[in-house]
Length: 157
Image: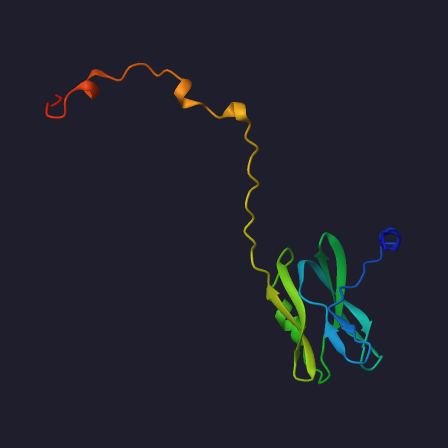
């Protein structure tokens, strides 16, 4: 609702970018592809969604449809290695437009990140007024030069 969005804006609270939602019968599903523009990324402390422990994470600040949103994830995975999103997002810079989408590979889900394809934007046709269109039949350009009246066999010097 627009009222609540306005309250969040005034409180300077940035909403989350939701790439996954829980299904009613259990499990999760993706919310589809999200075309976002990268604004910034910061290291912060977050609560690990698996263990509940406080760990170092990343807060990715993006813009989707003109609205700022954040996406947080841990810097390390369950085995203690650098999270795959850190490796993937390292190839991008602020200002890049990317597509983020939840995908499933077997039982495990992951966030697919790819550079957004440039959309070719066709310029809107300019409005042409009827008065701007010349009417050729009504304009007098004079008589053609004399060489145009010459016969085909004669040579022009």
